[in-house]
Every structure is written in C-alpha cells, then in structure tokens.
Length: 193
Image (cartoon, rainbow, N blue to C red; front, side):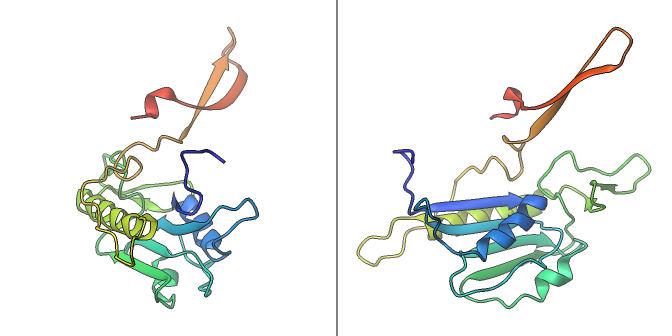
C-alpha cells in the first residue's frame, strides 16, 4: 500500500451508476484480502437501490438522492439502521450536483443515457456536501480515548458541485476525409481542480 494512506480508514463515494456499484459493494463487507478496511460508503443519486442488502457486516452507508429520482421508491423501502441512512431531498432530480444539468431551451429537463431526468440544484448540492462531510468526518476520523471526533465544517469536496476529476474524456482523431482514424479515452488534465 501507499505509506500516506491509513488502510484502516478508507471511504468510498460513487454517483449515478457508480452509486449503484457502491450500494452493492457496501454489503460485501468491510475488509478485503489486501487488508483494506472500508469504514464509510456514500451513494449519490443511484438510479435505484435494488442491489442494496442490509447486512450486519456492511460498510456504514449513506444514500443521498432526490425524491424526483425514478428509482426513489426502492431506496425508501430499505430498512434503515445503524449501518444505513437514506436521505431523500425534496424536489430534487438526478445529477443535482452538476451545474451543467440545466433545462433545454424548450423548458424540458435533459436526460442521461439511462433516462434519468437531470436538473442542478444549488441547495441540494450544499445539503449533500454537508451530509457527506459529516459522514466521512464521523466514520473516518481517528477516535482517541473513546471520544467521538469533531465534525469538520469546511471540507471542500471536489466531486459534489464540481467537475469529476476522474471523468474520462473521449478524443477522436479524424483523417483528411473526415473518417475517424482513432478513438481513445483519457483523463483530461483540465478537469482537475
């Protein structure tokens, strides 16, 4: 492992399809054969929660989504407890933290490839930032002498309300006739803050 990473205090966060992967992953357990110990999982606007299985050994998981999400009913049905929290934000759509998720010129909502209606919400983004900061602060903080850690109040989270630094960018090269000669996926340096 990396010397600067404490492998007993790792959290994971995913949004949209990544959130659905997080929902499944969280139920698999806290430890891996490599010795990593996951302590927190955050799932931002999953399309549904059908793959969530609440188990005693699951990672402490916080699901954050809007009530306008098409799969919100499956998330609301989950049994909640110490290991699972579901936060449903009123009047909020999929992709609420993406400033580019605006209405079309005709006033209709844009949709992603899966048919999720998209709409940015500054209020929902700020609420999610606060919830994620609290979840990660509480679950990943070092506890000393049995005293609960203080909750950070000003942590900047680049994924929520910003550009995703791990977003892939498709680049196409065309020949003189306009035919695609090569397509590749790469990380774009300008996406990093």
